[in-house]
View 1 (cartoon, helix red, strand yellow):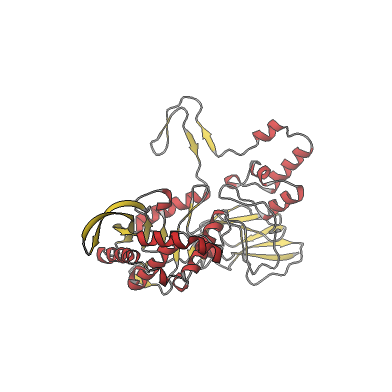
View 2 (tube, rainbow, N blue to C red; view 1 turned 135 degrees about the vertical axis):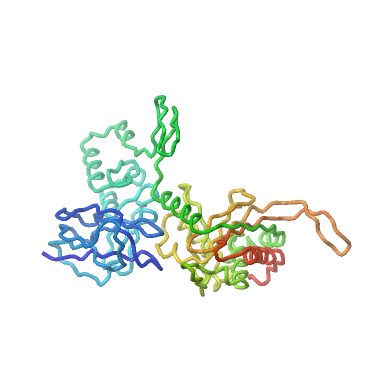
Length: 438
């Protein structure tokens, strides 16, 4: 019997440890290849750690709530399979993203060409994906199989039972429809039941369990408000020049670069310039120590089809041209919505931007993305009547205007710095000169 060392895998740039939240296997339990052995959590995501080999769990070195360093041996699995143990096992199954296979893995666990995809609400292990592919189970059909695993995850037994029932004719059309996984529970009879929070449930109310990503977002938002005293400053910016310039060059830009140019990369370009003017915005706080970050890594909030939110990071954004920013913004946003981001693409941000104007919002007070100390919300661009100064005197004209909302951590950023920073961004936008960008 060979002894396989199950190690804590890499979990993205800057992540050095994780907390064990649950063991799904106990000593003596049989483990299938690719089967989850335990679940862990970082300050970014919850993850499942599977075994690369089939065997029996014979030793556990940590318990629930223990903190484990990346690369540490978590458990020993005895297996009949010949193994070539790498120095560092780096396979991670992340329910918030697609299954991610690291460079250090000697062998991929699944055919990456498979059309089966995980989502925020439905996570599929490589083994389940392979079974679905082999048996000709479509994405739509797989999404309808109820899961018996944690948070409704479809296990190997679930999909094998479904296939067996289907092949034996046990599943009629009605049966298959009844097997669609339901994520809501409706109160169908008149009730008057107080919940633990004092909420009264009435007839027709629905109880909707948060998915895993929504729970993480909720925890981060509460933690950020608890840790950072939030202050907001607002500035109105006249972006008429930018709107006119973009309208003039967008078709030519698309023909030349094969990319649509939106307002977001333009705004990010000038936010970066303002960060260089006020580098104390690009800091993080560790107790009483202020860490002034050398790199400018811009997080960009992306709304997902599920309604959840994720913040991919543009690393070393100050080194990119507008064209480079445009391509990076489009790429990260697309892959975020397709759940194809890698763990290190959602870590390491030093300042975050959220474009709430894309939803028609005029202004908003965003919550700081910890451990950063500031975030800017970009409001909708609107045609507004405004006083226009000319050599002949003041006139009333129609201008394209937007509101910039700057939220910052008052422990380290005072009103002067927070206010001057957003004012500088507005000044850059209003004194726009397209020649410097292309």
